Image (cartoon, rainbow, N blue to C red; front, side, top):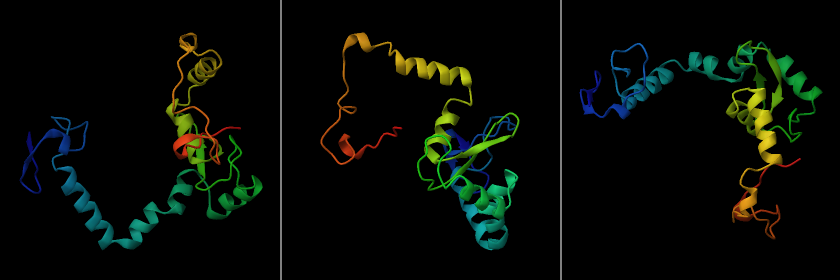
Amino acid sequence: MKKCTRCGEVKSLDEFHNKKTARDGKQSHCKACGIAAATAWNRAHPEIHRERSGRGHHLAKHGFTEKEWDDLLDEIDHKCQLCGKELVKPYADHNHETGLVRGVLCTHCNRGLGAFYDSEELLLKAIEFLRNPPLAHLGKTSRFGQRAETPNGWRMGRNPRSG
């Protein structure tokens, strides 16, 4: 339990964001107070908030101007450079150690690479796992993966990405 320095309420520790430099590892104010303060600041400073959070800010952190980004998207025909699907919300994929921008990906592919921590070793293990499933000898099948007579071929509206 901890007392919030803003609202004065005593709350459980999961009601506070983590903060490595704090003695107890938690913020001094609760999540609700922090969100309220941030929202109030954003409303009081809309131009600064827009500048810091908009598309331009996202592109600038990856070294692109709006025109460079738009030209790049045109050059790749607005398609994900991994799966080839139409880009709805394009992401500048980058190496988290060097910062090098590697390509433009869809949300799904960008998160997929991130889930493997940009590790070639883990991705190769995943490929081997798909080629030789360790539990295949059990002969078990999941009802969630069985094809059905639906427009996209899957049950419950699932639309797994396939080449």
